[in-house]
Image 1 (cartoon, rainbow, N blue to C red):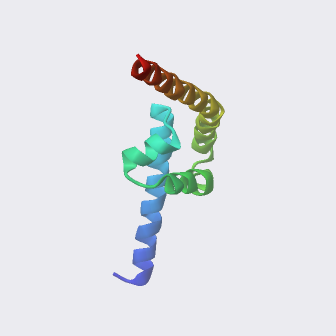
Image 2: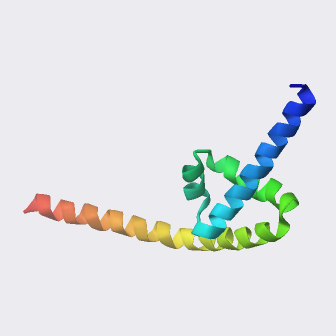
Image 3: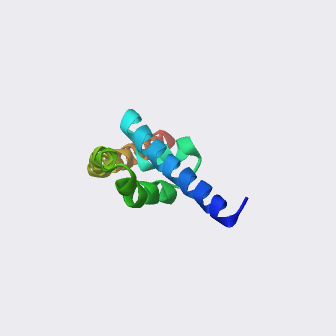
Length: 100
């Protein structure tokens, strides 16, 4: 296999992965984190593929995926706040039980 063949094969692999990541996010309403876990790759790789590579490969898919990721981003602070509140509620319960 020549260097050129290897580079073409690598480019095809990246393109295929980008499209699969986009389709996965669209189908599962996935987050970057859940997608990374499903594909066993890093969150930064998912982010790079979606934001840098996907727009050039399939712009309409990118637009749909971006809507989902933007929605996830808007909801993230709410989920984080709820998790923090629950954490401190449990700690308070535990503290009260230890007192009695």
